[in-house]
Amino acid sequence: MSESEERLNDWLRDAHAMEEQAEQMLSGMSSRIESYPDLAARVQRHLEETRSQRQRLEACMQRRGVSTSTMKDMTARFTALMQGVGGAMSGDEVMKGALSGYTFEHFEIASYKILIAAAEALGDTETARVCNEICREEEAMATWMADRIPETTRTYLCAKTQAWT
Ligand SMILES: [Fe+2]
Image (cartoon, rainbow, N blue to C red; front, side, top):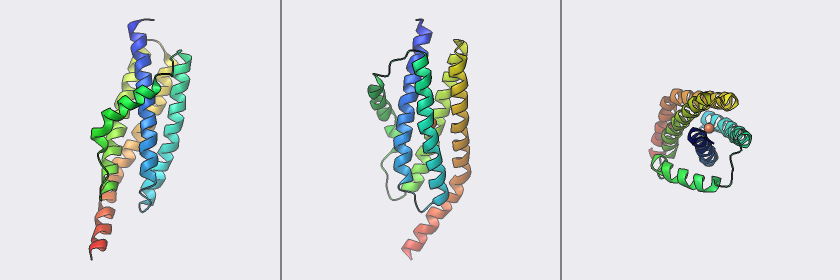
């Protein structure tokens, strides 16, 4: 196997770990934002998409004969990498969630752009197709979040004001 083929396999493993991390992040978030029903519903929908993304990546990996035995290590590595983004949840956790969620989506988008280009360069059209499909879902989530951040901020501030009076 060429070095480039191995590199693509590594990046697929990284993406798989990234989706596992996303799954944890989104499920943690969805249980803490009940007072923001629209956001909670969209996060729940993306959580289901994320589970399916992980499965679609697994299919690509199986087709390419990529072993899944090292996935645990990769997940740990990725968790360490993203620690700086998530930060500790505090009183304004819905805003911190919006911040880390939006950032995470863009990390995912960049990762899939790399995978698409690598798969295309190596002639793996199925992996490129799957990654393109997933990338569009991440872009849709990122756009939705960007559109909702101002309103979420206002709802947050309004709820705080009510709590103070
Ligand atoms: Fe994702």
